[in-house]
Length: 282
Image (tube, rainbow, N blue to C red; front, top):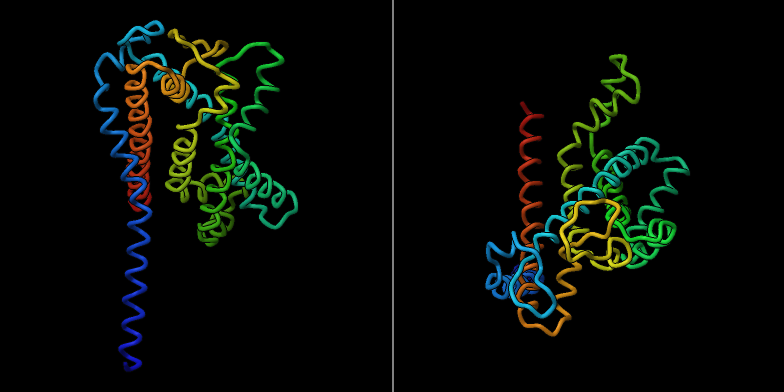
């Protein structure tokens, strides 16, 4: 075998290995989607989205309270995490060489690796025990704490990719450093920041452990932020470990709704990114 043939064989083997790795990575995702869709679509009815849970052991009902509760918890977590995460990312990018910025970066990386159940226990100690009550606010804080490091690190990395000439041009025109950052640098990185926020939402969409310690659960419909509130993840967990076959079917339907919500968020992120990029080019 000549050297040229050997190079082509090695190249072909490397391409085949990459293709096999991609397929191997996609197989678990395809299997998960197949099982969730095949099992969940059977119980996915109009009643599932509009009806309340039936009493224990009685078939039928839906997860309207859990769907609304999930949206409330995600909104509270976003309202808590997005401002803190974005501002932290801006600080880390603007003062990248300082010790405090390095400490914040290290803290964000460490927090991102903390198990969600530990965050749940922490928020339970600061937002549930002092008030002697589970609440939607406590659940939102727990989810927000999980979102902050993702948003902060994503914002920092994207701001560092913005060409320095844009910042220098704004400063040369007489803008202050803060004005240059918020009127030039941040808008340039806005599409990526939006994507990072959506990724953080997808990260918390399937969390159950922190909500068990904070918002707990509620079989009734409520929008009160100071009361326990239901969520899809906790409802699916409760139904999945129950001995009732009808609850098992509804648990699969709830899992399908969760997967659909994550997919919808990803599509919206892509749409928003393209629109923002188009506006910036225009």
